[in-house]
Length: 149
Image (tube, rainbow, N blue to C red; front, side, top):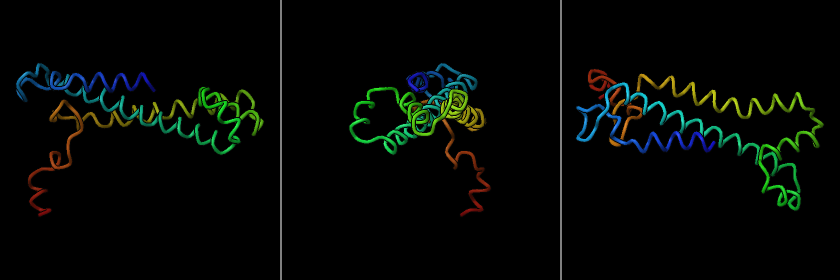
């Protein structure tokens, strides 16, 4: 999760540098650098968000199945290790089943974050502090806005 936070932070730190040169003073990029910055911004942010949800799910497993004394001792451990412990002890899971669980809990957040980032590429535009998703009103044409009132 920290690696995706670093990707997100670095893309946000670029700020206006990746924006097309015609969009603001100090910008040195073009449309491709803008799209790349927006993609890394969204990919790092979304993947980190979903990995955080996955870790929260592991924490919920710990909270539901452990008594307070044991949970206090195990809080310092890796949540994935502790939830593996719960699956092995409480549910008698074996290693092959545990590997499937790990793939889902770590692989799905990365896959979903990547799919959302790739799907957003056409909608990445220069914004106030860098390149990110376009607002709905900037995507909709003026004719449609006139029809909506």
